[in-house]
Amino acid sequence: MKIKNNIAVSASGLVYNPDTGESFTVNPMGAEIIGYLKEGEGQKAIESKVLEKYNIERSSFEKDFEDFTALLQSYSLVEDE
Picture 1 (cartoon, rainbow, N blue to C red):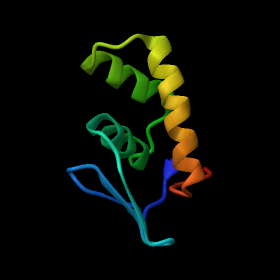
Picture 2 (cartoon, rainbow, N blue to C red):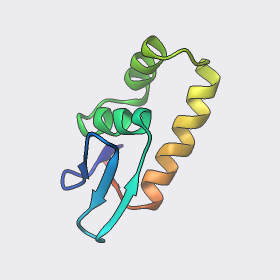
Picture 3 (cartoon, one colour):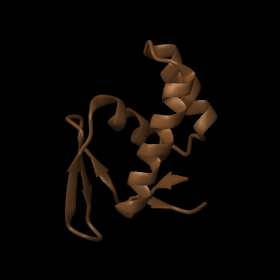
């Protein structure tokens, strides 16, 4: 999964989709994950970075990551690889 190239993400977590004209806000961790996805990082690499940086359980991350990426897909922010 990769974030579409034309999706803009600000430092404050504002996400803009020029295809639809919609904008969304995400928390700092969401913005960080979107950044990793834009770089082409996979789930395992992102998981490793997030678990190293934040004090969360692996099982919590896996569930939250799955939910978050499902939302990204529902808002047409990702492209299939």
